[in-house]
Length: 231
Ligand SMILES: *[C@@H]1O[C@H](CO)[C@@H](O)[C@H](O)[C@H]1NC(C)=O
Figure 1 (cartoon, rainbow, N blue to C red):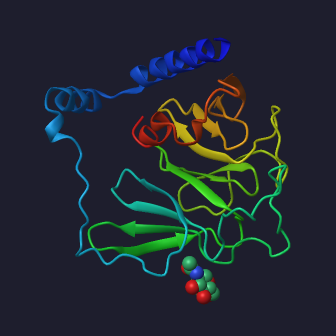
Figure 2: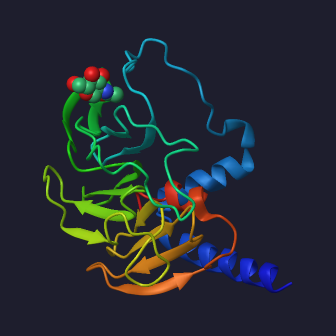
């Protein structure tokens, strides 16, 4: 009972946040789809798109305000049953960060890589969100950290969590999975595979609220990923 009540509160909180952050055109789209569900998004492979056959584990994609696609991938690393120990620590930190550029920025009209970055920084890439201001937010489940990089900068402006140290307190994260950013600059971190909570931060990175600790599994909550660019 307590769990379902808490889950209800979480859902309510999420819907409040969600309804406040919809833009007019998003509302129109949702009304349109409600009326005519058959017009909903359909997935079809564009076989003429060149693709990137050498990519292995791709953990996130996000589209920026110019329509370019940002891809976050793990180079030659894999996340499988042997990657973490029972306390969620990354087992093999000795091999160092991934030497490849882990973020590819792609022109969707022709599939060309416009630029790439993110070599020698990340251990186990996970979430990537380009926000309204063009900043790139990434999560690394191996580092247990969230980073915000201003456009075209390779040093983060903001960092949350302690490298390699999982935790459930105010200054630690545990396999954080994704970030969503409002136009106000407030942001939410879904944290994550082990903590199952959502943290809300001020634009400067001050923790304001913890939502839904240990309720459910907010790993891929639709509102987090779906709302991340345009809100
Ligand atoms: C990563 O870099 C190595 C060395 O250049 C290369 O052999 C490998 O194909 C790259 N992997 C990916 C997924 O880009």
